[in-house]
Length: 120
Image (cartoon, rainbow, N blue to C red):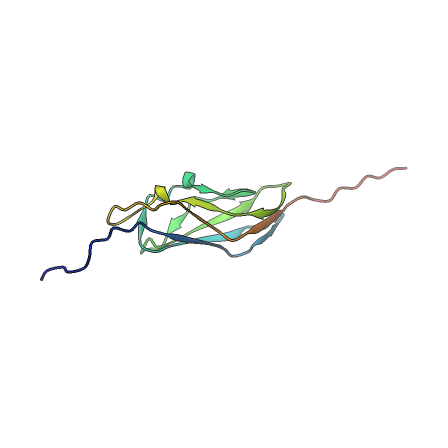
């Protein structure tokens, strides 16, 4: 049988979601990266996560959904953050690289603790 499907010439795209978008001290959240097709080569260095650190992402069996844990940095108060992925670092099974970047929706980090001064 002859394969009549057109050749895959399109690179992967991605969406990024956070399970919790309002992070406070002591909380972590799951970050889900969903690709349009199976990918290889997702490297943590291709992911920018302001206001915290991201664990190395792990893929599902199909390599279309990757998850990681985001841990906010202590003593940070930042209302506007987005996680960015450089899609040029990932390839689909046909060898096409992604182009540009993908970004999450906004999330906030508030891990500052109140302080008090007592004067006698």
